[in-house]
Image (cartoon, rainbow, N blue to C red; front, side, top):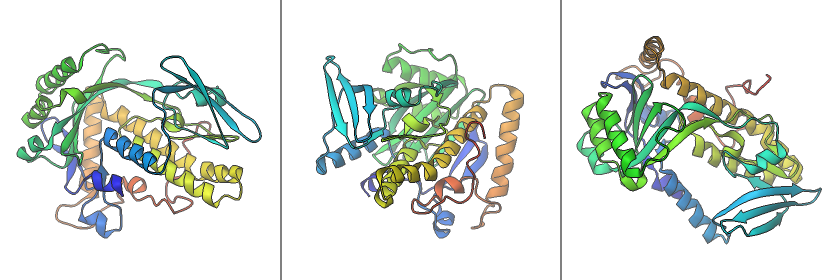
Length: 362
């Protein structure tokens, strides 16, 4: 409830557009249409705000969080799991528990120990520079609630955060190490130059100029091949450790929260720990694999870098946009292409709709 109240409602229309503001696909993620059809209201939140909410909840219920530590080793036997972690000062500590939920990120040490044959995450050929701008800049320009503008090998996106700010991001196809040593001030200038030189709409240029320097970051985008298993004995992988995905569906954090909720349900209804973990894996591994792979595919399409692919991409989304929503009509013309993602019910089992045929080897 705290996350929902803090996040910004996506209560207005948004769209995928060309850099000159030609609408390609207007997706009504949380409009009156979706509400009447019983789908949940869309919300967006800055990752840092989400982390703070979760941390505050840990404090409230007495969960101790150890900062500045990384997992260096993990062992398990028939009854227990022992994790060895190392602090910045090289001091090592061991923690023992009945089972381990490993959410130690895209470079997960736990995954390396128990799933050594899984290939390392692969760079996808593009970076993202992200930041935040004050919402008053957003409101003055009368922009959509969210949007993404596509060019050739680059794109610019924005969304309301719900914390008095507007999230902004710029994706560019480039070498992995490009500008890796740039300061935040230098990254802001890169953002402004990209918006100007690529001839984005003047509103985008203004957003780039309003970007808060202290919140500017650069990320090489990587994808982890979906795993066949997320469970090994008393250890279960979760979030980026299990299904690190590019941000092209905005579902990295969403899948982490969804996975945590389903895992807790399965552990509660499982007769034993092993059966609870088995239920979780059976129920959710297919869905997270689908979302991760579709996010990767979308990134390949969104970052189109040659004229033919750009034309194909724009034509495809323009056609889908015209077929899916009809102006002034409160009914979908064809099934919403995002319905499987945003209409998922945590208590439904198995998940209807898409089948999990995207696992390696299937």
